[in-house]
Length: 303
Image (cartoon, rainbow, N blue to C red):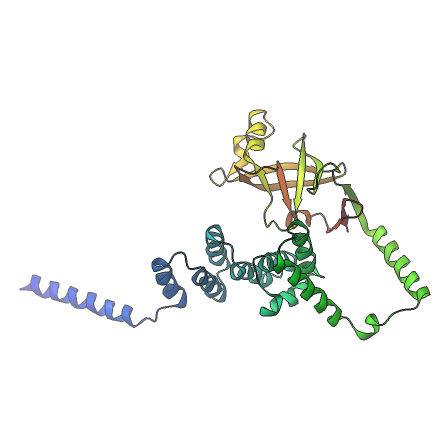
């Protein structure tokens, strides 16, 4: 009899707990997770999931959602969510690069006002990113249209006195003073190699001479599988320098040109990558403000 009462009491407790659990409302992320199980290839669902995770303040989960979705398919919405994460972190230059990628994927700038806000906060970073992508992909109509829209926005946002034509004397003085200020703040000018259309420079990794490529749209710096194996075999790096299940390589000293050094930089391992090393703007900006001078074919670093 006592045993039966104990069993009945236990069952009642279980039922009460289940009833309490049933009363808890389903969160938006839980609901979207269920939908994604049914439709894992729906990019719009991935985008909404990242937005919901970002709204909950879980940027790490949002980034994982977007990285997984972007491996399946690149869409404007996914890139804009990546831009929103960087915007929330106040990393406006990284956000600008994602905005440019969103435009490349087909996003019209006027469809998302955040593009113009990020462009302003990053000192025209979105326009620069679109221009770079348009140079590489001349047949992309979305890029040309996006660049036109951003340039029109830049003209509209200028004060009327700036838009008015200055006198020749004042314009000349302004140009000279601006040029002098820029020259005074230059840390280094690193020439690109002329024999290639890519933005490639000379460099060294832990003393090993190597070619470095600059990718203005990349979000992570990376190294090829061939280069990793060569450095490991010839003891420029050790097994202890390879982390995260062989997906990342820690470089103690990376020399750019002949006068600039980045210490303790992590490169993502890309087994099929053609270029030896690709540097993203985020890592380069650890050195200072970066500008790519297409006319002089060089990377300019400012204080």
